[in-house]
Amino acid sequence: MRERFVRYPCVAGQFYPGEKSALIKLLDKLIPKSLSRERVLGVVSPHAGYIYSGEVAGEVFSRIIIPEKVVLLGPNHTGMGKTFSLMPEGKWVTPLGEVGIDAEIAEKIFKNSQYIEEDQLAHRYEHSLEVQIPFLQYLKEKFSIVPVVISESSYETYEKMGKELAEILKPWRENLLVVASSDMTHYEPHNQAERKDRLAIEAILSLREDLLFERVNRYRISMCGYAPTIIMLSLVKALGAKTAELIRYETSGKASGDYSSVVGYAGIVVK
Image (cartoon, rainbow, N blue to C red; front, side):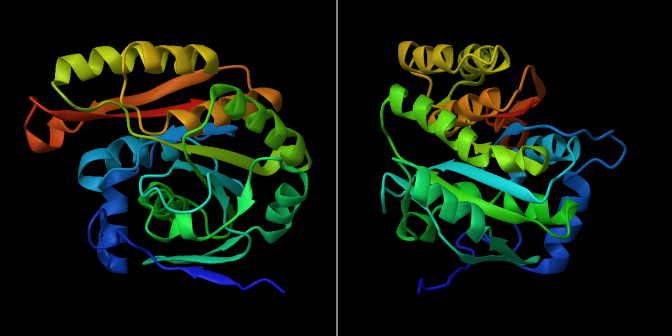
């Protein structure tokens, strides 16, 4: 019998408020209320501190109807754990409460994936998935997550993994959202970051994961979640996604006032 893991927040009080009422107050400001919502298959959402990327994440999530099943794909910043790591069961805790891991989907992935392995170590101190969850909790009372942390591998592996996951997740297609967690260019002047990020965003909007991989490498775009984004695109295209839309782009310069060295943030929906 598997151990039921409880994953406690590692960046509450740092990337976002650690106290429930303060977090709700901030999310009230970050998530627009007047925008129309629609069903989408995938999103790209940033994962920096909310003071920097929260407006982008808030706007992208405010535009979608959150379903009952959410697959979270994020990059591995810590280097810990398996190459492709999925927590099998248990719950994640934030100041807004608990979210359960979808054990049924996780079990099906373990039985049918040649890449994804059971592991909780990669998740222990990784922030890229954690910061997405309060936005989801604010907008949806009950949902389950499938948290996957992605490390470096080949383009072919990412592409095949996306198609493999699409086949596994097909029974839940009508009630599924795939979130690729990624920031864009890191620590370059604003104009340079914006120019590089435009190249990556164009590839995503064209639903060309091959072009995204090629441009990230050719132009040395320091997009930390390019691998989760490639997997997401491969996955949702196999489930029938046809178009993508850029909801918002900003850099950290807006919040910090320092445009000499910024991080870029993009919010994109794929439907």
